[in-house]
Length: 442
Ligand code: PLP
Image (cartoon, rainbow, N blue to C red):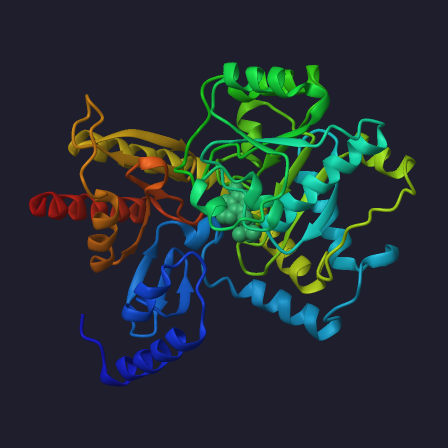
């Protein structure tokens, strides 16, 4: 593509400053110092992102599984501006409040199942999970069971990077990065037998909670085995273990349901959320608790919730989130997730049948497909093919995501909810062509 000189100069200037001053999340530092940023984004519209050199790319993962309503919805900008102009910030500590946070908490309660009616707000998913870990441990302490502290999470889970959230994360490199993990986190594979054995070995009297994503995202878009969560719910009830659903990716419609756990008819005790609540337009997350947990918290100890971030319930973030949920509702976007989800899964099936791929998986607008050198023996290519396909797809105008944790070789998809049938087809066709090109070079 022809890049005009002025844009190229601007890109290079920014890239130099980026290399010099910006430590990027989850990025190999040395490689970044050598290569600099590949893309510097300036704007977005619908499923597309544009970079400073004018390149237009399909955002096939909704950036970080979060820009659910799509890019460029200026109504959210208006909501932010109006709120900031009226009230930029006021504290929600010591029981004070403001209109956007009250309305948002009420709106979240409309979306959540069962008696999950009360939200504590945070700035993102990691803070939400850390909040939940502190809350469940406090809960058992005030119920007279202070030894119930252990938290069980699943292999290949991703729960974020705060201290507790890192400690709960099953993807190992995130934990190996630090020596300062929180105590009392256990990791279990996805079989019920293993979960039961773990509870037996550790003793239910020592276990506070089980946490899981409904469908694992960063770990490779892994749906649970058939009947898994239904059984987990029963086991948690039988053993007085609280069930935390990490709905940071699945929440607010990604799977075609309000929340991912709705797919399995399971109502958790606590929902942690972030990303989709504001479609990434503002940093906000939260922990939703059931009425029964709330009652316990208020009746025991000194009844104070000794936990709070300066930005718990930030007015602008709340106003943006409210507008985002209003758009999802008014534009019937969850129905589009279901309809376009079918198209996406059809497209993945086509790729699976056309190339050496297997393990097509996903639901709604969340999907993945995996590469194998030999489908029968499950032998892998020496180097992950998914990363090469992502590089080729970038040349063709698609920003993709390869996942190689746990020895897999996966391409993940989570496009914005506003995607059309034609756009799904374009996405699949770009991947199809990219795979063909990579195969020729293998
Ligand atoms: N939980 C899940 C399931 C996630 O996918 C993520 C982020 O990708 C997090 C928690 C952490 O959220 P944040 O990055 O907003 O702290």
